[in-house]
Length: 257
Ligand SMILES: [Fe+2]
Ligand SMILES: [Fe+2]
Image (cartoon, rainbow, N blue to C red; front, side, top):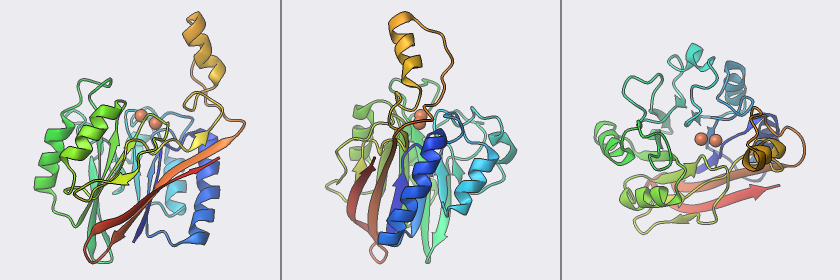
């Protein structure tokens, strides 16, 4: 089976790039399972209900979030009612929504979960290592897929080695910059440190570049606004899993400008 995983879809240009490139990819090969990181899909911050419904119409199976999970308050209207929106599992106890979902596909149980990093991120998040152990013990599944939402490349790589062979796919999100290290680790896990963003190419990780430069050079205080004009980028990975053995047979990264 072919699993397509699309990195952080950012605002208007991200939604356009997602729709356009999804059609193109599907013309070339069948996509059996589709995961999209949607933490920036609505104006760069969170996901509103319309955009969630739009993703469902596109055929998305699971939407993952991240540190921006709750920034669009509309999420609270539906996050507990839908089965396929996943926020970090290691958020503090009592956080709204769920950290994993299990979907039946052709008789296989596919569990998609998200972990958020602790390095250079919110210290209140629980340990992604301990919480993944807990999840793997409690939730029995044929295929596990993890969105590791983290800032530090080292934390993601260490995590991937630690869970190599126990989680079929570990893909990084959050930095919005794709890494060139997609590979299959020794014990069989398909891994990439960061899938990269699907959104504007000309901003600074999604935001209008003038605002960020002004903040960095002149201590500017302008609000973040998405870069909604100019070139678009699409970043994803395509992973093949043998349904009989449930083992990964290939991982490719996709970068389209
Ligand atoms: Fe993001
Ligand atoms: Fe993020």
